[in-house]
Image: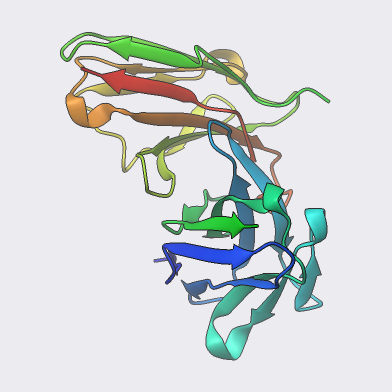
Length: 112
Length: 114
């Protein structure tokens, strides 16, 4: 069965600093991988997705993620964090035609 | 392009009462999902429809939850009777068939059971 682990429940970074959010997945074949962001009181917004091909994926808002099959990881990165990036971030794994399995999320706090 | 619409946005009910949530997916999206998100957790799939047929409802508590998607468009999720542990955000989402499973979410319906 597919599963996702986000090891960090909370992360605090200073504005302007770089960010890396970790995601590890468990899946037998090549997975479809996603990162979503959720601001307070809002639904989930897709940041980026990986289906196949180039393992470095660019997303919206300056985010990128790298698929590493050998490590079963799909970590999200941003070179310089803005205060507006404070939110909950969810990694998810799926398969064509089936629903996504989400991790428990990482809460990002950005300090001045 | 209009997104996934949900209503009501907020609902407070007493335990043992009933509640219904409505969802209108993105036009043309054949697949519709209902997720439950409890505070501090990731979304959990309750039910997945393709057109008006059920693909997966293995995690739907069928003794109290029901969902339907008449005519393959709008969907309704009902809880009866509600329990305190049903307090959560109910997220509706939709996707195209064969789109590589990119799922688009609505803003959610927030339920508080007191």
